[in-house]
Image 1: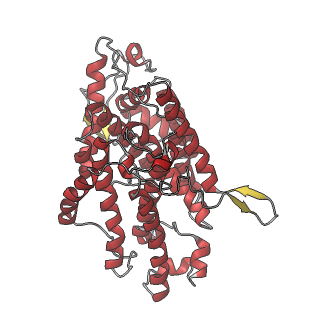
Image 2: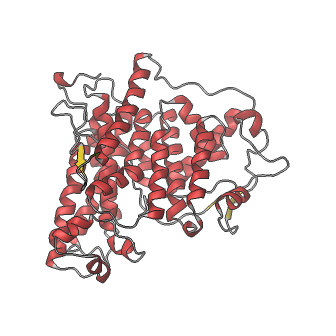
Length: 432
């Protein structure tokens, strides 16, 4: 199941050697290379005498994620874990997927709170080494071009953000698209677990200040300026590993973990960059929970939209136990017939996705005011996909639900108006 992101290729020859990709890549601009001086400026390792070229390929896909949402604001709880423990057949108690994700959320929130206590959330200035600023600017500009081409509405919203936050979001966006395309792009058949291990090793180098290419350099710079932790990035790669070995999900607990890996992680990556409104009284944990809720909602929406497409690839991203309870089987999915059983099943699945969107909507206003518009725009547009599935009489086997251009344009002023709403006043939710 795609997280619907774009792969923008790393250096031409090294990707082929390291990841087993085809060599027939389209060169974007062979004259734009930062191989020269890269060791002295970014600390990256390059082979002597080898000139780097930047290549790209893409596929049509919708923006899977924007970033934030919320829940837990009304009750004052930090994170509503729906089921913290699950008993296995042997009688042993195992930690549920939601509890595992909650542990990650707490870690990310603690990192931001530590920065808040040290008053160190201001964006750090660029390092003024000779040639560094121009190369970093070029790297960020390329990330912006990718975002503008493949996520037009979201890109438009980012233009209201401060330049530093805007560029950082572009860098995160591009890394996520590149990661997704490893297992869902045109060269996915060449990707192995070893290739993903190499990609994770490359991520670790990036966080150590040793980027491999221009686009890595943009993200490497971003993580030095904002309290962005590596764990959500690692978890997204784990989601890609899951796609290589798994094509069925026994229950929602398993599916929830997958949704977190491939989409919920994006929200956790983005919270430190988007920022929390200074006047917000929500807890830091609840804002991270908001980010997670929107990621889960978006991924569930993609799953419901792409049932037919995934089935043709031999994949079913629906809880097997819930299919059985509805009187449905894998054979029914592959047959692709809309029946009353299928309609009832889909209504329940849409109801669950809507619940996560509701949680997300309650939290967007807690974000920094300059970051709300792109989040609201993408949230409202993605939510409308569920309406389109219903309008298609739940035929997501042969019809692809999409939001028309007219509806997208109409959503922009609505999302902008909502972005002007201030955070809620709730004395019981004092920020920690």
